[in-house]
Length: 262
Image (cartoon, helix red, strand yellow):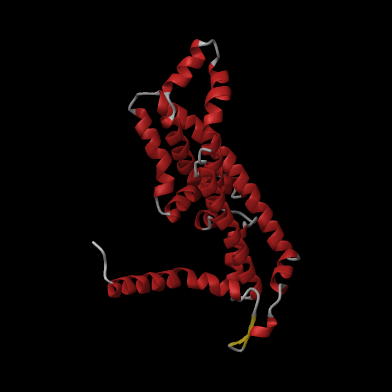
């Protein structure tokens, strides 16, 4: 059924309003990272990169960025190892326990982040574990594990069982089968899972806020800065975070897109 032009115009107008409501604030933040405002008046002739230069010389921002990278890389590495082990266990076992295992993996990701963060906070207090970057890594690992596990399991289930059987029949050990047969087929899924997990870890705020110690990550630093009001350096930081996460998502989309045959 073909819509008439008045109906199309209405749908286009609704779509534009929704897009403006969703992405309008982001474009405003980007604009005011380059242009200053004084007493409610926009100074269009004040275009500069001064706000970005201030970030480069802000030691607190540099330290928070370093903490974020450490947490993200450590959480991704741990999630890849655990996700791979759990995916292989689910694929190879046939017991009922694997469904319970899968439920436990998905729970921290499906629950509201405040519940996951509070649960971890209570656990760390009861276990007398001091909050630090290590507790943040644990929280982020639990959060991104479900995503990594699901991507790897989906790719593993798509592989033909005959690949493993043929490798074992030819005399290869299980370790050699994993290294030379399975791992090359899982490489794209591993890269995609790692990039998506890092993007989630990079932006995670609520869980981090509840389990962090004295060392802040970049989102926590940004939240602390916003409590004092929005300034050009905050808008610049928001712009850089948006650009970084968007680049990661585009990289994942490019990785997941199958290559066209020549």
